[in-house]
Length: 203
Image 1 (cartoon, one colour):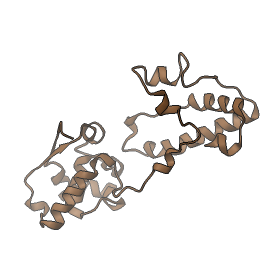
Image 2 (spheres, helix red, strand yellow):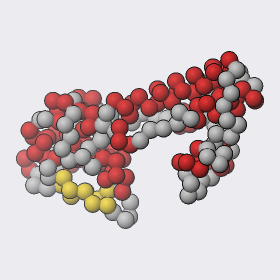
Image 3 (cartoon, one colour):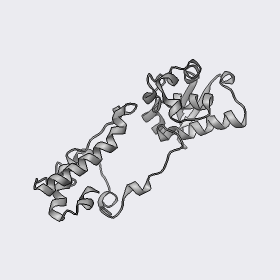
Image 4 (spheres, helix red, strand yellow):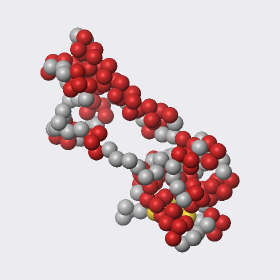
């Protein structure tokens, strides 16, 4: 994006990509912290910085993506699709695929929240009526959002247990459901402890 905005030529664009590529990082351990939200801004900053440095004359590697020790070799050594990754580079923009989420938390738990809210509103299920919550989920739910005892509101965003419990109690999954106070709510905390999720091979 920054390359296009600054109108860099081919050589400068190559150097900008090389410089930006060396900043590429980010691990899922930051989920539930401010680090996750920082990633998008940091990547944009890195891209703009790299484009400006290349414009000023700094040189980067010529093949940061496909080089012997480049991005693919380090981050995708077991195979990748070149066409999918760079086939439409400069013409296809993922930002146009963005959309608003209905809930302010990890997207893989959204179906669970939908189900909890439906039970609450259509069948008048109350928290005190619930003895257990057995969920069949996609593997990513457990990989990304298995945190039965979140300590902060941010951690609650990546706890499928909290997301379900808050949806049952409040009928929502917005900012108000992901405060530090809300994860300490005794009713929600009790309901979190009743959630058991298992991977379903059909999902």
